[in-house]
View 1 (spheres, rainbow, N blue to C red):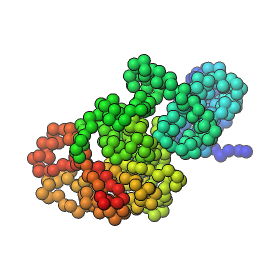
View 2 (cartoon, helix red, strand yellow):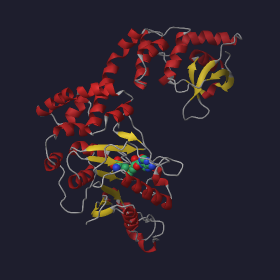
View 3 (cartoon, protein in one colour):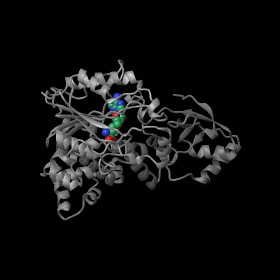
View 4 (cartoon, rainbow, N blue to C red):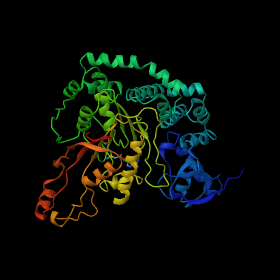
Length: 476
Ligand SMILES: C[S@@+](CC[C@H](N)C(=O)[O-])C[C@H]1O[C@@H](n2cnc3c(N)ncnc32)[C@H](O)[C@@H]1O
């Protein structure tokens, strides 16, 4: 089959080391090619693909030596085949091309196999071997250590998801494994836990044990605190228990959750869990973001199902990927089967308009005021349909006033969303508040210059944030 070729500028082509299977360019070969070009010899077209996210720029899949020779002889345009690899691995494709004219050296073959496997652990040794011109056994030997680490990573993911009470069928789907494999890995959990417990009992710190075994801190906490009650857990974690309905912290506890726009302190989640759930309860976080809720649930011995539209399967396998539909053409459905209903929902949506630029385009923070409130109403009604009668909801939100550059006396209420707007919608959808806890954001994040400018202008800022706790009966 003849493939269509196009003339493209030499200057629009680059050599991308990430998908180049050889150790480097053979300059003697380039010299010979350059001489051939000057003698009028016509080479086969080179092969390129468009560089992802860089319009008009191509990267080489085949023909690095020819391309170097064109450059050195001052040729401005070359004949090229522009490939669309349809999701196939570009490094392995480049390797199949490279072994035609000149076999990869032992070093190059080993390096290409390892890079390909690191980029995509589901590639089989046979597939890699075919691309680089080596046997399956040779590839097995090249990648044996990487495969072992990957297996270990898999065990850790399964351990974490199991600990949070995610059913095996969902684990299998999330990790791309069959249920038999999950079952087999689960059998290894007690041995895994024993080796960590051994290190803990020898007096190593949580951080040291986490580092040594490649676990996250919250997972090690979940083992270390096993058998302790909530009070004991708070003590070990260094969190003073707030006894009244004002919860204030200067900072997020960095051990729990990722750095994430709108991150909330683990201490706040822990207080919600302490006062409004019991050990072993199932917690649902429908917009889990940086994962502070699942992390804190691990430390506090609760199960947790978490979802978010931002998908991070490698670092956050326990946060399942799901987008709650925001317009009529999108699905507005429940992500899991009817089995297993939460005891407590912790709902921390992006605040209206505040962080629109930080989140995905489909995030609800980019909606108009009307659409945001409509989303909340539909979402809260959906929650109500899918929970138990006894399920509680902890709704975290803040007043939204457009105070940024406006003196308080001139602020217009129109366009803002205040606590009574939320309470109205909550009541309308069958959620009745039992507690409103003030949990203000720290004012320390404002610098002195900003504060002084606000004071001069009479601007009244917002650090208010509240946790509204609701049930479905009210205080009857
Ligand atoms: C305020 S953040 C949650 C922060 C989290 N509690 C933490 O401390 O890391 C809100 C999250 O809602 C997610 N989100 C926004 N709209 C969504 C939608 N329609 N479906 C699913 N997730 C959505 C965003 O991706 C974001 O991670």
